[in-house]
Length: 263
Length: 226
Image (cartoon, rainbow over all chains, first blue to last red; front, side):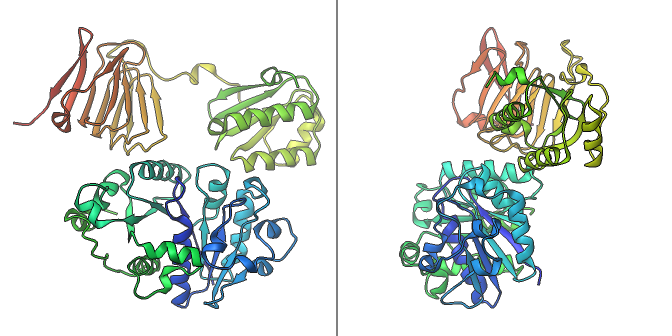
């Protein structure tokens, strides 16, 4: 197997990187792929909490890098999906415990074992971010329909382009169609207008996501959840499938924008 | 520790940076170098660095450690120049160059002449995203948008075939006859020479505009094909 290494990043904090990683990993694994997620947020780990695996942590990524355990030993198997694994971050260290070349080495080893490696990047554009993108084959930038989040996404996209990572794809998270309709929120069209990258999915605002996050039960496992459906669709698009976008009443211009734009 | 600036000096070369070490114990120099790199991360990021170590003696493990440390920070050490034969041998062993062509200072300065009309022009064929800063002594042409958080500082005119939503400074060397042109300047922050351009009624500025300064006041000229 040769895995695809995908990093999810945003610049701004709190826009849903960790939630997206957990949900995309669950969606890919539920579809039969072998998936490993890596928490890149050393010192502020929480992917383990969102996935409900906190109490199973024995070794973490810093233990792998510093040779205290083998790669296999730090891979925590998910309790629901047998082909889903998590490599947690160390909580008592900081970003300098890992270097970009360490990440490349760990991912190189993982590539032979799994289909997907998803890396949860920390917020910011410093060391932790650089570590997280070092090994990535492709990058997904996630943002909210808020001016500050979009500005940060633009900065991150600029850095990714400068680093030769190619043009990333965009996840627009927590869109509220009713607010967009009242012109109280940026529409998908407004966001794409500034960022000018390819959209891979729009996730609607959904209180179920918060419940799922707190309980360690990603919504992508809930067949009735709209947000879960959006994440499952993104996972399918990551595999190269053509999946029509959810009708989010995000404005009439969205469709023409999605299909009229070169990508 | 002594002032880091006296321990190391950094110069631009045609194709990278030349870092010259002063006369001090290696531990101290190394500290000063790392401090400089940490303080000016974006400046060093991705740089090709040649190191002039003077008479310092380096053994293989010192030098390979340094090379790895630098590469962790995105710096490519390609040459080590030294008066010491031991160090020279070491760097050859590690596949580093031991000679660099002499720096030519006049090539570092921006390729622009002060005479207006004779100015060179810089063409940028893409959108400038937040965090990008373009500084150029001549005219700047951008085919794409200037996003919020991006800056263009030009000695001459700035012509943008796209929306200006970031900061643009034309005539930055003090030439008040410079102009800014953009297809949509409604969210632009503009300066021409020493003047900050205050945008009037917003709706009009969504059309192509040429902005110049006449008698110390900003003048907006709309352009339309009709």
